[in-house]
Image (cartoon, rainbow, N blue to C red; front, top):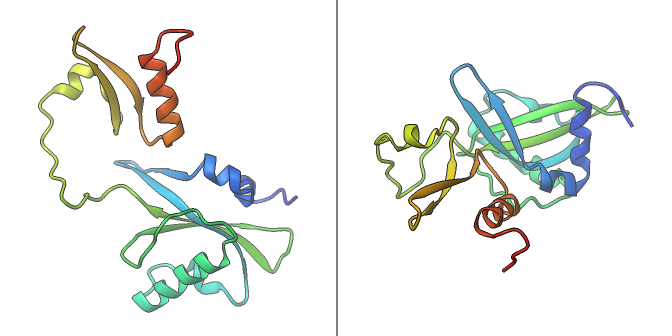
Length: 173
């Protein structure tokens, strides 16, 4: 195993690790961005230099995306187009002529077609929400809100948290 650069990126060579850790979070001074991984592959440093090119034109970007998808041995089930914004993390391998690339697309920071957000009416302050997205269960009978989680979570994590909130200890569905 190689022990230099972003050594933890090599964990993505195991498909299960990528399934359990499908997101890359980037914290900037004024925003937090979430990227979803769609490709992990090893490129040749002499023939694949375009794959780490900044600001490619549409044709070059399409070629980069094509190489990333074709070079990946796993199917992450993430669609990507030239309309997407991508992040490429690159690190050395034991072979000086290759680089490991972990490629992800931005999944937040944009709107959802057909959804018009309403201004916050103060409920986030009342619930103590400081991170979004935030998911709560409303207990209308007892007039309380139970937090399920904050930030991006996998479906299995949501299921676990949901059932922890709605079941009594020892009870199952």
